[in-house]
Length: 254
Image 1 (cartoon, rainbow, N blue to C red):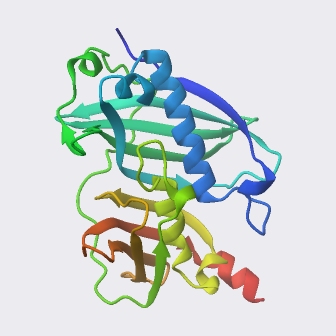
Image 2 (image 1 turned 180 degrees about the horizontal axis):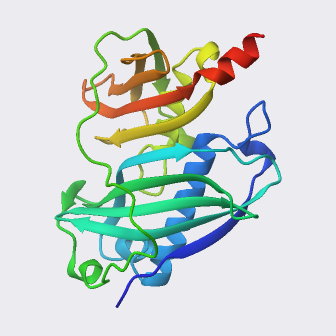
């Protein structure tokens, strides 16, 4: 069977916007995941298909670029397709369009397969390998390589894992990790426009855990590095790099 691209329409809702009336990045990543779910369902390899076999999809990394944030009530289309395969790594790309076909943002992501009982990653099973990858569009550069390590944290928060942080895999959902990553920054940074994020999900966190979120500046004033760590085990859960538009901050200060 050959894979094919999917296209899913969404309308930005009031509970998914910030003080500017624009969709938040976690909301947009949530739309991307929903579009990916629909596309894999049509291909017979959705999370529900995997769960029937004691397996599940796990997002390992996503790199997002935003050119314009859609506003409350605006209709968007998220296009997504399987863009490549490397050993156990399955790549999937996304593009977000306005109703007028303006490219609002794009992302590339890396997915793995996990045994839901053993909580261990496994080789890509044959029934997924049999879905031949035929990209719907030109693939974005794969998200790979190391991110810079956060050396000197400037900001820190503790995030207790609660019931509504847990997803179908019974661990903290990745959009919540993304939200915690951003929430660690002070208001003066969050008031800027987030241009992009590269986030790596390294380990699970479950109900009852406490996550320590830290952040600090990178090699320029508009770049921040992030790390989420389990308070109980000291294991690094998430590493990320965010890029912000300093012009937005200057406009706010006028």
